[in-house]
Length: 290
Image 1 (tube, rainbow, N blue to C red):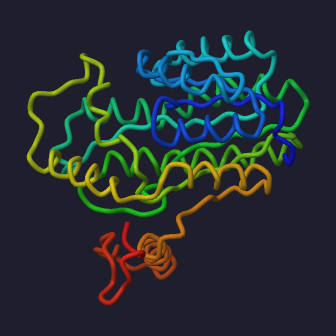
Image 2: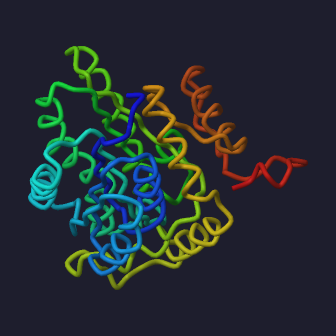
C-alpha cells in the first residue's frame, strides 16, 4: 500500500511509546487515526495534543477484553467508515523464573500481549477484508519473539505467539487472494514506558508475592529502555514496511541479531539451546548495545 494519505489507521497502546509515535507518523502522512489505550486520561491528553496535526479520535480500550475490542472496531467504522491499517501494539512486561511466575502474571501478560492481538484480528480483519481494498495489519511483537532469554519466560511466550500468529495470518491472507497484508514488528530496546505497565494491571490480576527476581527484571528492562531507540524510529520502520509490503520488521542491533542467528543455528543443528544473553561482545562499540 504505497499511498497512505486519507487512509484510516487504528492504533492500540496509543497513549505512549511506539503507539503514540505511530499515531503521530500516520497523522503526518495525512491519515486519519483512531487511538486506543487502556489509560483513558492519558489517551485524552494525547488526542488533544495531536488534534492540530490531523483527524484523530480516542477510544479507551482494554485489548485483553474481546468485547472491548469489538466496541473499538464499531467506534472506528462509525467514526471514519473504514479501516485500512490496524496496529496491534499494546503490550505489558513481567519477568522472573518460569516456576516462580504467578498464574496472574501469565493471564495478564498473555491477555494483553497475545490475546490483544487475537482480539484485534478477529474484530477488524473480517471487516477490513469485506472492504475489498488494500489494507495492512501490523502486529507488534519484539526481538523477544524470535529469541529466548532466561527469566523473561511469560514475555517471550507472548511475543513468540504474536510472531506465529502473524506468520499464519500472512500465509492465510496470501492463500485466499486477499488484498490485506501483514507485518510483524520486532523491536529491540526502545525508549517506552513498558517497565511501568504494572500501574494498569487489573485489580483481579494483581499479586502480593512478587519475587525479587521479577522486580529486578522489570526494573533493569525499564532502565535499559531509557537508552533505547526513539519510538519514532519504530514508526518509520512500520511505514516503510507497509509501503514495501514487508512481513518481518526486525532489529538492526548486532547483539539481538546474533542471538537470533544463534537460536536458528541451534535449531538447524539440533543442538541444545545456547545460554546466550543480550550483551555486547568484547570490543563491540557502544552503539551495538541496546
